[in-house]
Length: 280
Image (cartoon, rainbow, N blue to C red; front, side, top):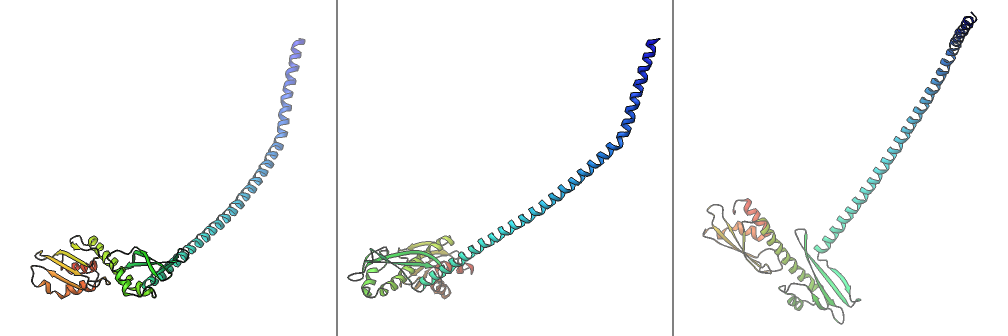
C-alpha cells in the first residue's frame, strides 16, 4: 500500500516537471524569436555594408584600369609619334643623300692622319643604289692616286691624263663618275632583261656591256631576229646605235623599234615591244 502511494507521488512529480518545462519553453520562445530577428537584422546590415564596400572597390578598380589604359594609349601614341618622327627623318636624310649624289656629290674621308684622302663614288639606276667605288690619293706633295677599286676596263688612266687631277680633283671625278654610273646602269639593265624576259636570249655581251646582241622571235611567223646594241659612248647608259638582222626585209628599217631601244632602258623597251605585240 505504501509502495503504491510512493509510485503515484513520483509519477505526479514527473508530470509536474514536464508541465513546468513546457511552460518555461513557451515563455522563452518569444525571446528566442526576437533574438533571431535581431541577429538577422544585424547580418542583413553587415551584408549591405559589404555590398557597398564591394561596389566601391569595383568603381575604384574600374577607374584605375581606365587610367592605366589611358596611360598605355598615351605611351603607345608617344612611341608611334617617335617612330613616325624617325621615319620622317630617315626619309629626309635619304632624300638629301640621293640629291647629294645625283648632283655629283662625293664622300670624302681623310686617311693616314690627314696624309691621304679617300673618295667614294656611289652609283645608282632607277632609284636603286648599285655599287660604290673608292679611290685613295696622297695629298702631299701633290694629289696623286695611290690605290682604287675601279674595274680595269674603265679608262681611269686616260681620264687622269686628260684631267688636271693634281690641281683639280673634280676634273677627274666628274667624268669618272659618269663612266662608272653608265657601266653599272648597263649591267643592271642586262640583269633585269634576263630576269623579266625569259624568251629573249642574250647571245653576246662584253664585260663593259658596251656591246649586247639579243635574239628574240616575232609572233607572226616566229622569225628569229638578231638585235645588236652598240654603246659607243661608254659614259651613257643608252645605246648609240641599234641594228637588226632578220629574214624579214622590212624589219631592219623599222624606225619605231630603233626609237624605242635608243631612248628607253633595254628591259623597259622590250616590255613595250612585247605589250604592242611586236615580239614574243
